[in-house]
Image 1 (cartoon, helix red, strand yellow):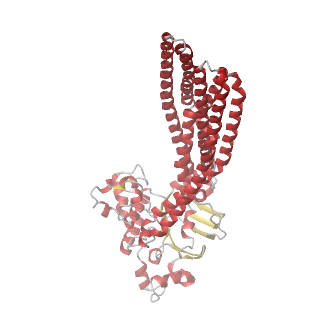
Image 2 (cartoon, one colour):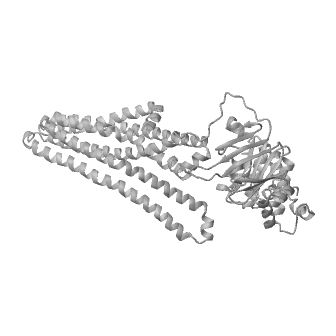
Image 3 (cartoon, one colour):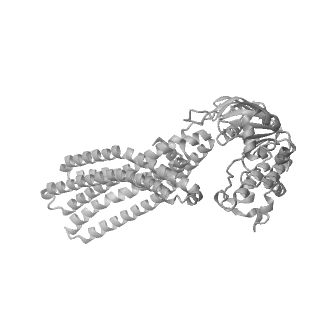
Length: 586
């Protein structure tokens, strides 16, 4: 709740305007039954047409005043709640950008999406309800009770009993509703996760004809959400009618008590009944708003969890002047384990890379290659040891400065909705057209881009869905080259290319990035064997580091990879091996 109050304070002016006009609207609603009683008891009973017209015009003016109050209140309530919703979403988005991969892994992307969308909507609706109903309901209830007591002082004990009983029912509603609504939001997380997983892997699902299996999985998640929703609504279904029963019972008792006292004043009796109806309506509104409050509080706690999340990585102190002198990389006894896993993904990695060197990194699937290179830009922090870039510990370099020196082409090519040129400009927003074309040529991308009807202005769908895997990889490489980084990380980013195109792309990278340190992760031994040094990994450990020839002599895992891909007929140092491995130079 404190989070919502915090944002309401930022828009207190508009909030107060909405409250003022809400008060005007509520006052108009409360005044009308009183003047109606005057019309009946003074005008109709006394057959005085002048009084009837006078009170009628007053009621018409009150109605107009209430209508104006309602219109202005709606305008300001909607505007305030929408602005607050926008600001909370933006705050979550900005916070997520500051979190490390470890934080994101723990919070889970599907849950973050639910919090940005559904949870913020719950908070937004509640804030809107505060200005539209929440304040109106208690004012209406209290005002109606006071006016009933003024009309009939004898009804004071009855009104107290009704209010106490209704209050207890509303409290029970909240007490039982909060955990159920919280559970419902978590089940919504699960449904979003299942949907996201299916949509991202829809081709695989269709290829393996697993539609029925996925339908069952989605049906189970949907069923659990429905059950959580039913459990939540059941609380409202029980307590809502009980509140109505309490107030309607009070109306019956009131009519019985007032039968004699007000037998000659039908207008006052009508007013009391009208006010009791308003009390009933107000208590119903209070109950509904409190149900909304329960959901909003549960959602607010989930949003607050993100906003209060402490980044797993410590940011370097800004007051310390740090410069990254060059593109050298040093690993000193580095180990790393993902959260909630007992076995380290990287163990005691110790090696150094000089500026401008090309390091090939190879090893079986799951050997820790990608994890190793992810420690350089601080996507994760080493649990032991040190990673140095340009002679500085990466934990002492401001993250923005560190990542400014590094360009990454990940295993899965990631493109964004927009034109091809807009995607390439992620590398350098100020790049000239010639620089864009040069980077595309180096990545062998201009060949297919120039054949597209709109060339570099071609619109890409989400994730570059209208391009092939190889085309997306080449554009990702061009984007990285346009950044002109000191360190270029190629994380198995040519897996969708044929051998000839791969050789051309790698040759283009070397020609257009002179002096750049390159970490080249690949599953293909032909890709890495002509690098300056090759780092071979197995089970998270470095089992070999050196040239192709030295590893063929001393590293059995490397020889096994060589035999599986090239064949046993080419021995180390022979011309055949060189010819087959010379793909890095084209």
